[in-house]
Structures are given as structure tokens and as C-alpha cells.
Length: 268
Image (cartoon, rainbow, N blue to C red; front, side, top):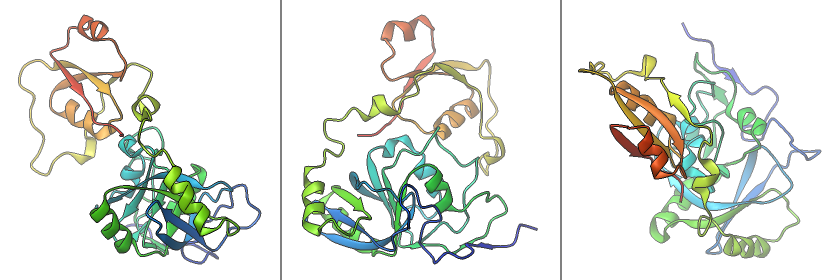
């Protein structure tokens, strides 16, 4: 049997369990968009003094928030989850897709007050606080999603400082760089060249593993911000994978005499 559900003791739902650099955790925050929209919410996770800027986008996944947060392709973005409740199964050290969190901010409709999963090691808000990432809960994520679906991604600002006016936040959102003209790929790529040998482990497909026929295929994977699960699937498919950074010279790649070259996705 799994562990019993855990509740955040002594904390109102949605309010961060870590104060960051401030003496008191604020009970309200705002998300300002470049089109002039203002959404009021409650902060959780890291509560810093400075506003957080980023391109606001949405994700429709029902689960996998920890994988989304550590997906390098979301670097520079504030991710809004369309699933109405997030955090109900906590976090752990296994469900990661990279070495760190790359999103600039995280927006949810309801931060779960109950964590119920035998694999959970830490509640989401504490996990975000330790990694200095600000989250927002208690706002209408459907309204944010409808706006983004109609207009496309918008730059936005998360702010917990009540003394900053709405107009100033909107002006800051409009002036934000977002993803335009920023080399996010160079910021997220792994600089150390390494071999990747980890397969899917216990997460093999339901239809079973595909048996490798003949010798394993040596390939070079160019890391432009890829998830670890891509590498796991390449290994599972019979590849010997060597990972190189995004700016690895073509000559250096060809010197390895790979049977194939994989160029990953990435941010921006």
C-alpha cells in the first residue's frame, strides 16, 4: 500500500512554504500581460522582491508538471497549466527531464492542498522554493489560455510587490525581451560532452521492449535543449548515444564516425 495523503500543515492552500528573501510571504500577486490584462493570484514557491518576466504560454497536459518544469525547451517562459489542479502527487528526484528547472514562472488554477502518492518526496511549493521559481495559484487559467490561444504567446510579468502599479507592470511586460533575439539554446545546452547509457528502465512501453537487432548504432545527439526522455528512448531503440553541445563543430562530430546525427528541439 502507498503512503497516506499528506497535507500542508499550517499553510493556507496556495501560499508558499518558503519566504525567500522577504520577511513575510505576501498573500497576493499579479500576472500582467503585454496586452494590458491583469490577473490577481496567490504566490507560492519562491517569493522574491523582483518581478519575473517571461513569455507566457500554456500546456494542456493532465500530469507531468515536474517534467514540464525541467524541460529546457520552456526556458524563458512562464508556463500556464490548463489542468485545474496541480501538485496532487508531489515531486521526487526521478521525474526530471534535465539538470534544473528552466521555466521563469509557473501558473496554476489550484495548487493541491493534498499530496497523495507513494513516490512523493516533497510538495511542489517547497520544491519550487528551493529552486527559486515563483508560482501563482488561484487565478482563472482558462481565461489566460483563451487569450493566448487567440492572440498567441504574450510577454508577461509576475509581481508580488503591491506597491508597483498595474500600469507599470503592463509597461514592463510590453518592454520585456521574451524569447526574441535571445540565444536560449546556448544557455540550456550541456557543455560537457558525455555518453548517455540510461534507457527507460521501469518505464518501458506497455507493448514491451523492442529487441535490438545486430550491433548497437553509434549516434551523436546535438543538445539544443532536449529532454532526457529523448535520450532514454534513443538508447532503448538500440543506439549508443554521445551527447555534444549545440555549437560542436561539424568536423568534430564527423570525426566520431557516427551512423547518425540527432538534432534536438529546444527553446525559442
